Amino acid sequence: ATFSKVDKVSAELFSLTYGAVVTQLLKDYEDVAAANVQLEKMGYNMGVRMVDELLAKASLAQCASFSETAEVVAKVGFKMFLGVNVEVAAATSSEFRLLLSENPLAEFVELPEECSKLEYSGLLCGVLRGALEMVQMRVECSLLRDTLWGDEVTEIRVLLKERLVEEFVDDDE
Amino acid sequence: MSKVAESCFSFLHMEVVNTLLSPTPTAEELQHAGRRLEVIGYQVGERLAERYTKDRPRFADTLEIIKFICKDFWYEIYGKQIDKLQTNNRGVYMLQDNRHRLLVRCSPAAERQSTAKQMGATYGKFPCGLIRGALCGLGVSSSVGVEMTDVSACQFTVRIQMP
Image (cartoon, rainbow over all chains, first blue to last red):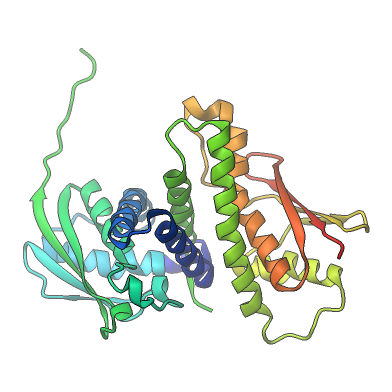
């Protein structure tokens, strides 16, 4: 429902731009592994900003459990930003998996052989890590399956490493 | 036509700018980053123009192509049209966007206020590339410049290169 409220741009613009960016990165680094790291980092910084946007636009209550967090990420987060439906699988108190049957990032993409190890959707892992860290959860995300690797769906695993404790620092000393 | 949230695209663009710049960028760095963004925009513009024109009749002349960019192309991409189009009828067109989507989220940090205008110009490079790429895809070679007229308004100057 939140998706209908936000300003939108063409998904083609987004996916083609991302494609052009990835191409540039690969040219700059000349190394797939280094590009993967960079994409994840870009995602992280985006996630940090996106969680603010999410909390501002969607009216959310605090999540009682990690599996509830999973539902919010999938049903509210992905829906609001990318307009896609994402399934949650294998949700426990410290882990969940997201299954994307449609992925706007990879709309027009085919990986050439020399880039078969490229984590094209690694940006999403970064986004999740950045966003969840802002709400006091340190997580580790990995791309288990990707349609670009010939899999049926894109699957992201999110592992909860620790819950961060908010520290308050008195600055009027 | 599928859509994504505008914020999503803005944040991606911001991140691209960030990876190209150091925290306190020099004029030279800004220029270099601008060129890179222009190239990315160009590639995107060329492809989008192709997609958006595949079902329409041929354009009669350059003006018609420019009008297409201002109306349909801009609308498909940003959900709004170019606000004002002017021309000297000798191959120069001025396209004014009063509220450019990429710029409305910009607020330069205090230490960057002095370079705010240059930063703005850097942010304007991506749409510059979009326009140049789209024109090129439609068979018109041009050079495109951008000027910030207000905080989130910008004016693109398209100079058609005569064959």
